Length: 169
Image 1: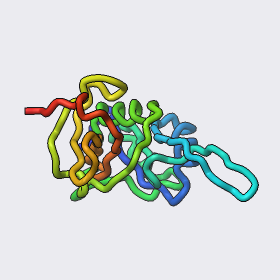
Image 2: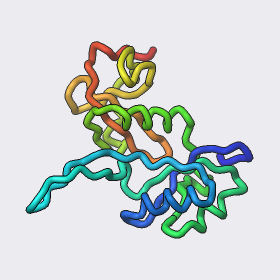
Image 3: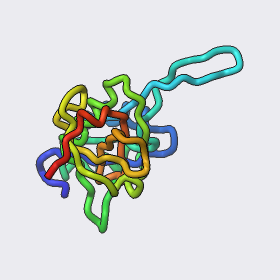
C-alpha cells in the first residue's frame, strides 16, 4: 500500500519508452530504477552491444502517495501497477536483489511467475546472490534460481550451483 513514506512501485510504460520515461522521472526528481541488460545485436554489416530493459515496458519508481498524480502524468507512463484498486508496492530488498543480479555477468532470463510457483524456497550461501532468498524453478535444470517480484508477477532467473543453495525450513 502506498503511504507517506516513499515506496517502490512498478510503472507500465508505452512500448520501447522505458529510457525516455526514466529521464522524465529524473527531471521531476522522482527516484527511479530501470534495470538494463547488455545484449549483442547483429546487423548485416556489424555486431553491436546494446542495453535493453530487463523488463520490457516496466520501470520502477520510488514515490510517496502525494507524488502519484505527478507520476501518472509523465509522458510515456500508461499506468501504475495495482491490484484490486490498490497500488502494488515492491519491497526495497526485491529492488536491491534485481540490482545485484543485473550487476553480475550472469545470463538472466525472465519468466512469468506462474511457471515458477512450484519448487523449494532456498537461500544462496555464496557469490553475488549471497543471502538472497528465492525459488528453485521446477521443470528446469537443477540450480536454476529465481528472484520473484510479486508486484509484476515476474521472476528473474539465474543459474547457480545447486551446492550453494540451502533449503528454507
